[in-house]
Image (cartoon, rainbow, N blue to C red; front, side, top):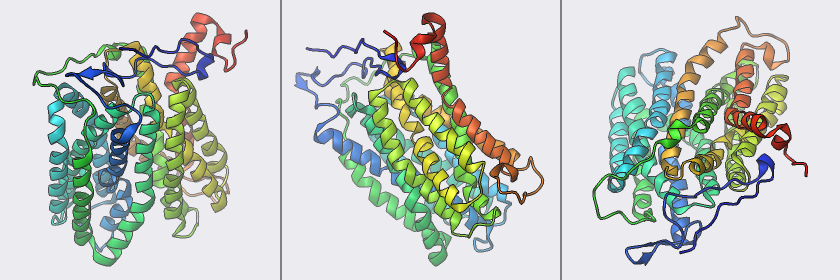
Length: 459
């Protein structure tokens, strides 16, 4: 059986760094006397990618639109008493739990792959129970329990096996696949807030939640039917061995630290953009438009960064995303308060920052190269946990930053508003999101000389 050898030639840090693509399966691998379907191409791979992308609608549709529900809960229409902070806790709990449970879920499903076929249906059942229950609760505590905790667990159980199946089907084009998947989430962020806003205004909270329950079931059931694993389940029920060697290596933790820092700042523009637009005197429709444009720009951003991750090194693609995110924050958001400039800002920032999660495939490739016995899906779950840490910290940090100034300035600079400290934090965290790249370049400079770190190597 032929094996693909990693490319040994490296053209500075922008060259493609490839290691073993997956655990022990390849395009021409035989199992039980039968050849496995090809990776990266063919009907099975594309069906898996399509199912995984469409699945982002029921998984993330409510989470990315929670700002609409938070506004509704805070109004007199909901009939639910609570402070704005208590309603915000529902959304932060939901997003935080979804991400923080990923490392445990991915580890468990890797060790016991037979659980994957039941994990998706169980997740759907949990989401249905949580949504139906939340439609009939009348307290903040009930909403936190149903929407903040139970719904997050259900969506996490749905996301985990679906992502692991896609990871099996794509090896050399893994970055492209993850980019398309994340673009599906971004597309949800464009459309669903407007859909939920219209439903709440016309039918009210209970009808909206129940209709979303039905839509989630209708969307998810066909996906669970058509989505199949590439590698057949082993006949033995014995737990799979799992290597944690990559956790003992510095590269993983440097990249994980960068992910957490980037997530801390990334959540701020999308969370406060609508409020910022209102406070600086823009029209009431400006905020939702800016948020929608941010998500819209993330669609091509996710795909482009994913494709780049398949072609160039993790160091390069992370730096592109980080500096591409930081520049518009400092120059467009911080130095102006005009609507036209804000449109340019959300488009540029959304493209580069929205593509950051698609760079993870290149990180996974580098980590896999250092520890060939590790599983890329498990690494992906760990990286999701790092993002969850950043999101959880981002809520209280952003709240503290917006209260650092006492009043809204009349000056034309975004830095002069009460959001000035938050703008600076967003730009700085975007730069520090490439922490793993900086660490790698410094190590390379220390061991091989500064010239080896330049984009163009001298002969």
